[in-house]
Length: 354
Ligand code: COI
View 1 (tube, rainbow, N blue to C red):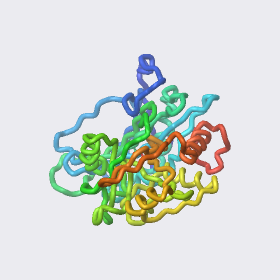
View 2 (cartoon, helix red, strand yellow):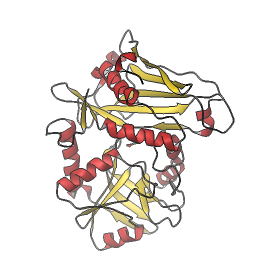
View 3 (spheres, rainbow, N blue to C red):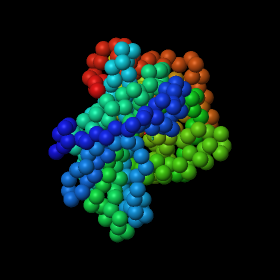
View 4 (cartoon, rainbow, N blue to C red):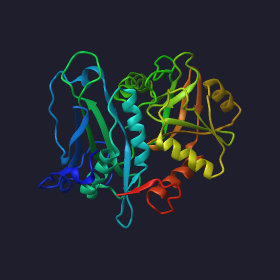
């Protein structure tokens, strides 16, 4: 077990922040001065340090590159008007990270490294937290296998890192979505519920084909019938149908247990909106759309928070939404923003003070 005092800190001489303005930032392009690093060797975590952000060096036989033992999380930190820094629900991401680790045959990371290491890292780079609407410090914890060995088996060594990226909004505008009928993101028994790198790599071709015909992303459907709705792009999806928020349920193991998904469902319920976590098919959605009952459709995820969908295409059916007229998604987004900026009481205990 690593106590807080065991994390060595080596600071940079001159901050890169002198060359960067924290206004109008793109997502995930810039990185702060420091990173957290730890090694898993001989069955235990060691070498826990915060050091200058820098390139890593590995053998070409690095097992993560060949067999994909590689997982990550996405978390955000915010700064209030008075300059206090908070992380949004890091404990939930910590639990999910270790769920992903177990699925991918990787060691779990102790809280002392994941949470306390992240906290100390952000404290060191606190000046990098943007204080601007829709901006945050995006936190990327990740772990990958490091054995230099080409046999297919779980690696015996791993590296865990946390890097930080001051970021603006992920999506600039409401999305156009193509319902995916050929490619599959996840099947029962697979790795869809885990946040492993391969899930994202495997999704790229579908997104590229959607881009080629003018759509931003795909709405994933199940592996067998391509009719049961799963996720939108790399986000969970919520449909407001006849005043009820419907979202695909988690029990099949094909859907990521989104922390933003859970936050949004909690806030919807708080506003008195009924939430149904259940199977929903494209046929049900189209029927509801034709009956004028589909009011709002949006993705939820850490990077985008709430991403409105203005158009969905399935075969010859095009569903269009006037996102300017929506009331529910903007209200939930405001509820989230108010909690994150500490403008309202944190009734759910989501804000972790640094
Ligand atoms: C998220 O928003 O939850 C994500 O994982 C997005 C990330 C892959 C950029």
